[in-house]
Length: 401
Ligand SMILES: Cc1ncc(COP(=O)(O)O)c(C=O)c1O
Picture 1 (tube, rainbow, N blue to C red):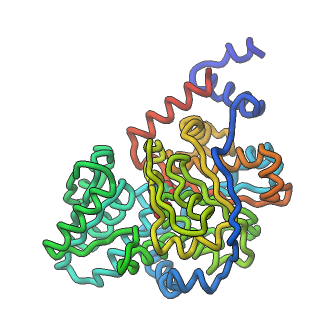
Picture 2: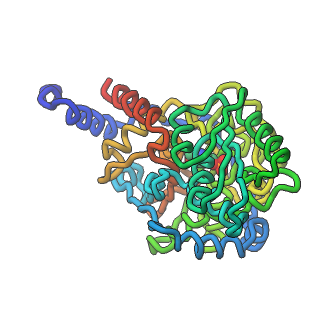
Protein backbone atom coordinates (compact mmCIF):
# COMPACT_ATOMS: atom_id res chain seq x y z
CA UNK A 1 0.00 0.00 0.00
CA UNK A 2 2.77 2.43 0.95
CA UNK A 3 4.53 1.70 -2.33
CA UNK A 4 1.32 2.45 -4.19
CA UNK A 5 1.03 5.76 -2.36
CA UNK A 6 4.58 6.67 -3.22
CA UNK A 7 3.87 6.11 -6.91
CA UNK A 8 1.24 8.82 -6.80
CA UNK A 9 2.43 12.35 -7.41
CA UNK A 10 1.30 15.85 -6.40
CA UNK A 11 -2.42 16.36 -6.33
CA UNK A 12 -3.18 12.72 -7.07
CA UNK A 13 -1.15 11.71 -4.08
CA UNK A 14 -3.22 13.96 -1.83
CA UNK A 15 -6.41 12.59 -3.38
CA UNK A 16 -5.29 9.01 -2.80
CA UNK A 17 -4.28 9.63 0.79
CA UNK A 18 -7.47 11.53 1.50
CA UNK A 19 -9.66 8.76 0.04
CA UNK A 20 -7.82 6.22 2.13
CA UNK A 21 -8.23 8.34 5.27
CA UNK A 22 -11.90 8.84 4.60
CA UNK A 23 -12.46 5.13 4.22
CA UNK A 24 -10.74 4.69 7.56
CA UNK A 25 -12.91 7.06 9.54
CA UNK A 26 -10.89 6.57 12.75
CA UNK A 27 -8.18 8.79 11.21
CA UNK A 28 -10.27 11.89 11.87
CA UNK A 29 -12.07 12.92 14.96
CA UNK A 30 -15.53 14.22 14.13
CA UNK A 31 -17.28 15.44 17.21
CA UNK A 32 -19.85 17.91 18.37
CA UNK A 33 -18.97 20.38 21.11
CA UNK A 34 -22.56 20.35 22.36
CA UNK A 35 -25.94 18.85 21.43
CA UNK A 36 -29.35 19.59 22.92
CA UNK A 37 -32.95 18.72 22.09
CA UNK A 38 -35.66 21.40 22.13
CA UNK A 39 -38.13 20.77 24.94
CA UNK A 40 -40.51 23.34 23.44
CA UNK A 41 -40.65 21.77 19.96
CA UNK A 42 -44.00 22.36 18.28
CA UNK A 43 -43.74 22.97 14.53
CA UNK A 44 -46.68 25.10 13.45
CA UNK A 45 -46.77 26.06 9.75
CA UNK A 46 -49.31 28.85 10.27
CA UNK A 47 -47.43 30.49 13.14
CA UNK A 48 -44.17 30.39 11.18
CA UNK A 49 -45.68 31.85 8.03
CA UNK A 50 -47.39 34.58 10.07
CA UNK A 51 -44.12 35.51 11.76
CA UNK A 52 -42.33 35.82 8.40
CA UNK A 53 -45.17 37.18 6.30
CA UNK A 54 -46.47 34.52 3.88
CA UNK A 55 -47.09 37.17 1.21
CA UNK A 56 -43.38 38.10 1.35
CA UNK A 57 -42.45 34.48 0.78
CA UNK A 58 -44.72 34.22 -2.28
CA UNK A 59 -43.45 37.53 -3.60
CA UNK A 60 -39.75 36.77 -3.05
CA UNK A 61 -39.75 33.84 -5.48
CA UNK A 62 -41.86 35.72 -8.05
CA UNK A 63 -39.51 38.72 -7.99
CA UNK A 64 -36.13 36.98 -7.69
CA UNK A 65 -36.85 34.35 -10.34
CA UNK A 66 -37.31 37.22 -12.83
CA UNK A 67 -33.88 38.75 -12.14
CA UNK A 68 -31.40 38.62 -15.01
CA UNK A 69 -29.20 35.49 -14.90
CA UNK A 70 -31.40 33.88 -12.24
CA UNK A 71 -31.12 30.13 -12.11
CA UNK A 72 -31.57 27.68 -9.25
CA UNK A 73 -28.28 26.73 -7.60
CA UNK A 74 -27.34 23.03 -7.92
CA UNK A 75 -28.58 20.40 -5.49
CA UNK A 76 -25.65 17.95 -5.37
CA UNK A 77 -25.83 14.40 -4.04
CA UNK A 78 -22.99 13.38 -1.73
CA UNK A 79 -23.26 9.67 -2.45
CA UNK A 80 -19.87 8.61 -1.13
CA UNK A 81 -20.70 10.15 2.24
CA UNK A 82 -24.24 8.75 2.41
CA UNK A 83 -22.88 5.24 1.68
CA UNK A 84 -20.25 5.69 4.36
CA UNK A 85 -22.78 6.84 6.96
CA UNK A 86 -25.50 4.32 6.03
CA UNK A 87 -28.01 7.00 4.95
CA UNK A 88 -30.23 7.03 1.87
CA UNK A 89 -29.29 10.44 0.42
CA UNK A 90 -27.34 13.52 1.37
CA UNK A 91 -28.28 16.60 -0.66
CA UNK A 92 -25.94 19.62 -0.66
CA UNK A 93 -27.41 22.94 -1.84
CA UNK A 94 -24.47 24.63 -3.54
CA UNK A 95 -24.82 28.38 -2.95
CA UNK A 96 -21.34 29.06 -4.32
CA UNK A 97 -23.19 29.33 -7.63
CA UNK A 98 -25.69 32.01 -6.46
CA UNK A 99 -25.50 34.67 -9.18
CA UNK A 100 -21.87 35.85 -9.16
CA UNK A 101 -21.98 36.70 -5.45
CA UNK A 102 -21.06 33.20 -4.28
CA UNK A 103 -23.40 33.00 -1.27
CA UNK A 104 -27.09 32.62 -0.39
CA UNK A 105 -26.98 36.16 1.00
CA UNK A 106 -27.40 37.40 -2.58
CA UNK A 107 -31.07 36.48 -2.21
CA UNK A 108 -31.85 38.52 0.91
CA UNK A 109 -30.29 41.99 0.91
CA UNK A 110 -30.76 42.66 -2.80
CA UNK A 111 -34.44 41.66 -2.61
CA UNK A 112 -34.99 43.92 0.43
CA UNK A 113 -33.34 46.85 -1.40
CA UNK A 114 -35.74 46.38 -4.32
CA UNK A 115 -38.86 46.16 -2.14
CA UNK A 116 -37.97 49.07 0.16
CA UNK A 117 -36.86 51.54 -2.50
CA UNK A 118 -39.78 50.71 -4.85
CA UNK A 119 -38.17 52.22 -7.95
CA UNK A 120 -37.24 55.52 -6.24
CA UNK A 121 -33.78 56.44 -7.58
CA UNK A 122 -33.08 59.19 -5.03
CA UNK A 123 -32.67 56.88 -2.06
CA UNK A 124 -29.28 56.10 -0.52
CA UNK A 125 -29.21 52.74 1.20
CA UNK A 126 -26.95 51.81 4.12
CA UNK A 127 -26.05 48.64 5.96
CA UNK A 128 -23.54 47.10 8.37
CA UNK A 129 -22.09 43.74 7.43
CA UNK A 130 -19.61 40.94 8.04
CA UNK A 131 -19.29 40.71 4.25
CA UNK A 132 -21.84 38.71 2.33
CA UNK A 133 -24.98 40.63 3.32
CA UNK A 134 -23.30 43.93 2.37
CA UNK A 135 -22.29 42.49 -0.96
CA UNK A 136 -25.90 41.61 -1.63
CA UNK A 137 -27.09 45.11 -0.64
CA UNK A 138 -24.34 46.70 -2.79
CA UNK A 139 -25.30 44.52 -5.76
CA UNK A 140 -29.02 45.24 -5.29
CA UNK A 141 -28.24 48.98 -5.18
CA UNK A 142 -26.03 48.80 -8.25
CA UNK A 143 -28.74 46.93 -10.20
CA UNK A 144 -31.19 49.73 -9.40
CA UNK A 145 -28.75 52.67 -9.77
CA UNK A 146 -28.85 53.63 -6.08
CA UNK A 147 -26.11 55.03 -3.87
CA UNK A 148 -24.93 52.61 -1.19
CA UNK A 149 -23.01 53.04 2.09
CA UNK A 150 -21.56 49.94 3.74
CA UNK A 151 -20.19 49.90 7.30
CA UNK A 152 -17.68 47.21 8.23
CA UNK A 153 -15.80 46.40 11.42
CA UNK A 154 -12.03 46.17 11.74
CA UNK A 155 -12.32 42.36 11.39
CA UNK A 156 -13.79 42.31 7.87
CA UNK A 157 -11.09 41.44 5.33
CA UNK A 158 -9.96 43.84 2.62
CA UNK A 159 -10.89 41.16 0.07
CA UNK A 160 -14.51 41.40 1.21
CA UNK A 161 -14.38 45.22 1.36
CA UNK A 162 -13.03 45.34 -2.20
CA UNK A 163 -15.74 43.02 -3.46
CA UNK A 164 -18.32 45.59 -2.24
CA UNK A 165 -16.38 48.56 -3.65
CA UNK A 166 -16.35 46.80 -7.02
CA UNK A 167 -20.15 46.83 -6.86
CA UNK A 168 -20.08 50.62 -6.51
CA UNK A 169 -20.55 50.86 -2.72
CA UNK A 170 -18.85 53.39 -0.50
CA UNK A 171 -17.24 51.19 2.20
CA UNK A 172 -16.68 52.75 5.62
CA UNK A 173 -14.45 50.95 8.11
CA UNK A 174 -15.34 51.36 11.79
CA UNK A 175 -13.05 50.65 14.75
CA UNK A 176 -14.36 47.75 16.84
CA UNK A 177 -16.58 44.78 16.13
CA UNK A 178 -19.76 44.19 14.09
CA UNK A 179 -21.99 45.81 16.77
CA UNK A 180 -19.90 49.00 16.54
CA UNK A 181 -20.24 49.05 12.74
CA UNK A 182 -24.02 48.69 13.10
CA UNK A 183 -24.20 51.53 15.67
CA UNK A 184 -22.24 53.80 13.33
CA UNK A 185 -24.45 52.80 10.39
CA UNK A 186 -27.61 53.70 12.34
CA UNK A 187 -26.15 57.03 13.54
CA UNK A 188 -25.01 58.07 10.06
CA UNK A 189 -28.21 56.89 8.38
CA UNK A 190 -30.39 58.86 10.82
CA UNK A 191 -28.25 61.97 10.34
CA UNK A 192 -28.24 61.78 6.54
CA UNK A 193 -31.67 60.34 5.83
CA UNK A 194 -30.36 57.05 4.39
CA UNK A 195 -32.53 53.90 4.26
CA UNK A 196 -31.12 51.11 6.44
CA UNK A 197 -31.27 47.66 4.86
CA UNK A 198 -30.27 45.43 7.75
CA UNK A 199 -30.70 41.66 8.03
CA UNK A 200 -30.86 41.84 11.85
CA UNK A 201 -34.09 42.85 13.60
CA UNK A 202 -34.53 45.01 16.69
CA UNK A 203 -37.54 46.62 18.33
CA UNK A 204 -39.63 48.41 15.69
CA UNK A 205 -37.23 47.29 12.94
CA UNK A 206 -38.72 44.05 11.65
CA UNK A 207 -39.86 44.64 8.09
CA UNK A 208 -36.47 44.56 6.33
CA UNK A 209 -35.27 41.46 8.22
CA UNK A 210 -38.55 39.76 7.20
CA UNK A 211 -37.86 40.64 3.57
CA UNK A 212 -34.31 39.26 3.72
CA UNK A 213 -35.59 36.02 5.28
CA UNK A 214 -38.22 35.76 2.54
CA UNK A 215 -35.36 36.07 0.02
CA UNK A 216 -33.57 33.12 1.66
CA UNK A 217 -36.72 30.96 1.44
CA UNK A 218 -36.16 30.84 -2.34
CA UNK A 219 -33.49 28.16 -1.70
CA UNK A 220 -36.19 25.85 -0.30
CA UNK A 221 -38.60 26.60 -3.15
CA UNK A 222 -35.87 25.51 -5.58
CA UNK A 223 -35.11 22.35 -3.57
CA UNK A 224 -38.80 21.40 -3.58
CA UNK A 225 -38.57 21.41 -7.40
CA UNK A 226 -35.17 19.69 -7.56
CA UNK A 227 -36.01 16.41 -5.81
CA UNK A 228 -39.09 14.36 -5.24
CA UNK A 229 -37.51 12.59 -2.27
CA UNK A 230 -38.93 13.65 1.08
CA UNK A 231 -36.24 15.33 3.14
CA UNK A 232 -36.14 13.76 6.61
CA UNK A 233 -33.46 15.93 8.24
CA UNK A 234 -32.04 19.36 7.55
CA UNK A 235 -28.96 20.95 9.12
CA UNK A 236 -29.14 24.75 9.19
CA UNK A 237 -26.19 26.99 10.04
CA UNK A 238 -26.92 30.01 12.20
CA UNK A 239 -25.32 33.32 12.97
CA UNK A 240 -28.16 35.62 14.09
CA UNK A 241 -30.60 33.00 12.78
CA UNK A 242 -31.90 34.75 9.65
CA UNK A 243 -30.81 32.05 7.20
CA UNK A 244 -32.16 29.27 9.40
CA UNK A 245 -35.50 31.03 9.93
CA UNK A 246 -35.83 31.89 6.23
CA UNK A 247 -35.19 28.25 5.33
CA UNK A 248 -37.71 27.10 7.96
CA UNK A 249 -40.30 29.49 6.53
CA UNK A 250 -39.60 27.91 3.14
CA UNK A 251 -40.05 24.44 4.63
CA UNK A 252 -43.38 25.50 6.22
CA UNK A 253 -44.50 26.86 2.85
CA UNK A 254 -43.16 24.37 0.31
CA UNK A 255 -42.43 20.96 1.93
CA UNK A 256 -45.26 18.43 2.28
CA UNK A 257 -43.55 16.66 5.17
CA UNK A 258 -41.67 18.45 7.90
CA UNK A 259 -38.11 17.19 8.40
CA UNK A 260 -36.21 17.21 11.69
CA UNK A 261 -34.52 20.59 11.84
CA UNK A 262 -31.08 20.78 13.44
CA UNK A 263 -29.33 24.12 13.92
CA UNK A 264 -25.53 24.19 13.95
CA UNK A 265 -23.33 27.00 15.33
CA UNK A 266 -19.69 27.68 16.23
CA UNK A 267 -18.99 26.54 19.83
CA UNK A 268 -18.03 30.08 20.91
CA UNK A 269 -21.10 31.71 19.38
CA UNK A 270 -23.90 29.29 20.22
CA UNK A 271 -26.62 31.88 20.90
CA UNK A 272 -29.42 29.84 19.25
CA UNK A 273 -28.47 26.73 21.23
CA UNK A 274 -28.34 28.66 24.53
CA UNK A 275 -31.67 30.37 23.78
CA UNK A 276 -33.42 27.12 22.81
CA UNK A 277 -32.01 25.45 25.92
CA UNK A 278 -33.41 28.21 28.18
CA UNK A 279 -36.58 28.85 26.17
CA UNK A 280 -35.81 32.57 26.00
CA UNK A 281 -33.36 34.84 24.16
CA UNK A 282 -29.83 34.54 25.58
CA UNK A 283 -26.83 36.64 24.70
CA UNK A 284 -23.43 35.00 24.32
CA UNK A 285 -20.26 36.90 25.06
CA UNK A 286 -17.95 35.77 22.24
CA UNK A 287 -14.53 35.12 23.72
CA UNK A 288 -12.87 33.93 20.54
CA UNK A 289 -14.11 34.68 17.03
CA UNK A 290 -14.71 31.55 14.94
CA UNK A 291 -13.09 31.06 11.53
CA UNK A 292 -16.73 30.69 10.39
CA UNK A 293 -16.91 34.48 10.47
CA UNK A 294 -20.48 35.01 9.19
CA UNK A 295 -21.74 32.71 11.95
CA UNK A 296 -19.76 34.26 14.79
CA UNK A 297 -22.73 36.13 16.31
CA UNK A 298 -23.61 36.48 19.99
CA UNK A 299 -27.31 37.28 19.78
CA UNK A 300 -30.29 35.82 17.91
CA UNK A 301 -32.24 38.35 15.89
CA UNK A 302 -35.83 39.01 17.05
CA UNK A 303 -37.84 37.88 14.02
CA UNK A 304 -35.85 34.66 13.49
CA UNK A 305 -36.26 33.85 17.17
CA UNK A 306 -40.06 33.83 16.79
CA UNK A 307 -39.60 31.15 14.12
CA UNK A 308 -36.76 29.13 15.64
CA UNK A 309 -37.97 28.73 19.22
CA UNK A 310 -40.58 26.02 18.49
CA UNK A 311 -39.60 24.73 15.06
CA UNK A 312 -36.04 23.57 15.74
CA UNK A 313 -35.82 19.94 16.84
CA UNK A 314 -32.25 20.15 18.14
CA UNK A 315 -29.18 22.36 18.24
CA UNK A 316 -25.51 21.53 18.11
CA UNK A 317 -22.21 23.34 18.09
CA UNK A 318 -18.81 22.57 16.60
CA UNK A 319 -15.23 23.79 16.94
CA UNK A 320 -13.16 25.17 14.07
CA UNK A 321 -10.96 22.05 14.07
CA UNK A 322 -12.35 20.32 10.98
CA UNK A 323 -13.24 23.39 8.90
CA UNK A 324 -10.10 23.51 6.73
CA UNK A 325 -10.10 19.73 6.26
CA UNK A 326 -13.73 19.79 5.15
CA UNK A 327 -13.07 22.61 2.67
CA UNK A 328 -10.31 20.42 1.18
CA UNK A 329 -12.48 17.29 1.20
CA UNK A 330 -15.28 19.10 -0.66
CA UNK A 331 -12.78 20.22 -3.31
CA UNK A 332 -11.14 16.78 -3.56
CA UNK A 333 -14.45 14.95 -4.26
CA UNK A 334 -14.24 12.90 -1.06
CA UNK A 335 -17.95 13.14 -0.26
CA UNK A 336 -19.40 12.86 -3.76
CA UNK A 337 -18.47 12.83 -7.44
CA UNK A 338 -18.33 16.58 -7.96
CA UNK A 339 -15.67 19.09 -7.01
CA UNK A 340 -17.31 21.59 -4.69
CA UNK A 341 -16.04 25.04 -3.77
CA UNK A 342 -17.34 25.46 -0.23
CA UNK A 343 -16.12 28.25 2.05
CA UNK A 344 -15.85 28.15 5.82
CA UNK A 345 -19.60 28.57 6.47
CA UNK A 346 -20.40 25.72 4.08
CA UNK A 347 -18.68 23.15 6.25
CA UNK A 348 -20.75 23.03 9.49
CA UNK A 349 -23.56 20.93 7.98
CA UNK A 350 -21.14 18.22 6.88
CA UNK A 351 -19.09 18.34 10.08
CA UNK A 352 -22.14 18.11 12.34
CA UNK A 353 -23.81 15.43 10.22
CA UNK A 354 -20.74 13.17 10.35
CA UNK A 355 -20.23 13.85 14.06
CA UNK A 356 -23.91 13.16 14.92
CA UNK A 357 -23.95 10.04 12.82
CA UNK A 358 -20.84 8.64 14.47
CA UNK A 359 -22.19 9.20 17.98
CA UNK A 360 -24.54 6.26 18.62
CA UNK A 361 -26.67 8.11 21.17
CA UNK A 362 -27.23 11.14 18.93
CA UNK A 363 -27.69 8.95 15.85
CA UNK A 364 -30.48 7.15 17.67
CA UNK A 365 -32.02 10.38 18.95
CA UNK A 366 -32.07 11.88 15.46
CA UNK A 367 -33.34 8.59 13.99
CA UNK A 368 -30.75 8.37 11.23
CA UNK A 369 -31.12 5.19 9.19
CA UNK A 370 -30.94 3.82 5.65
CA UNK A 371 -34.12 5.72 4.73
CA UNK A 372 -32.83 9.13 5.83
CA UNK A 373 -32.62 11.91 3.24
CA UNK A 374 -30.45 14.67 4.65
CA UNK A 375 -30.33 18.25 3.40
CA UNK A 376 -27.19 20.34 3.96
CA UNK A 377 -26.81 23.99 3.08
CA UNK A 378 -23.60 24.85 1.24
CA UNK A 379 -24.04 28.49 2.18
CA UNK A 380 -21.05 30.02 0.42
CA UNK A 381 -18.23 29.38 -2.01
CA UNK A 382 -14.94 31.29 -2.12
CA UNK A 383 -16.68 34.58 -1.26
CA UNK A 384 -13.42 35.59 0.45
CA UNK A 385 -10.90 34.13 -2.00
CA UNK A 386 -7.84 34.82 0.15
CA UNK A 387 -9.30 33.04 3.17
CA UNK A 388 -10.66 30.21 1.00
CA UNK A 389 -7.23 29.53 -0.54
CA UNK A 390 -5.60 29.57 2.88
CA UNK A 391 -8.13 27.07 4.25
CA UNK A 392 -7.80 24.84 1.20
CA UNK A 393 -4.01 24.58 1.47
CA UNK A 394 -4.16 24.11 5.24
CA UNK A 395 -6.80 21.40 4.74
CA UNK A 396 -4.76 19.65 2.04
CA UNK A 397 -1.72 19.60 4.31
CA UNK A 398 -3.74 18.29 7.28
CA UNK A 399 -5.18 15.53 5.13
CA UNK A 400 -1.81 14.44 3.80
CA UNK A 401 -0.09 14.17 7.20
C1 LIG B 1 -21.64 33.18 4.83
C2 LIG B 1 -22.62 33.18 5.94
N1 LIG B 1 -22.85 34.29 6.61
C3 LIG B 1 -23.75 34.31 7.62
C4 LIG B 1 -24.42 33.18 7.99
C5 LIG B 1 -25.38 33.28 9.12
O1 LIG B 1 -26.59 33.75 8.69
P1 LIG B 1 -27.58 34.40 9.76
O2 LIG B 1 -26.81 35.47 10.44
O3 LIG B 1 -28.72 34.88 8.96
O4 LIG B 1 -27.93 33.31 10.70
C6 LIG B 1 -24.22 32.02 7.29
C7 LIG B 1 -24.90 30.81 7.57
O5 LIG B 1 -25.49 30.54 8.52
C8 LIG B 1 -23.28 32.02 6.25
O6 LIG B 1 -23.05 30.94 5.55
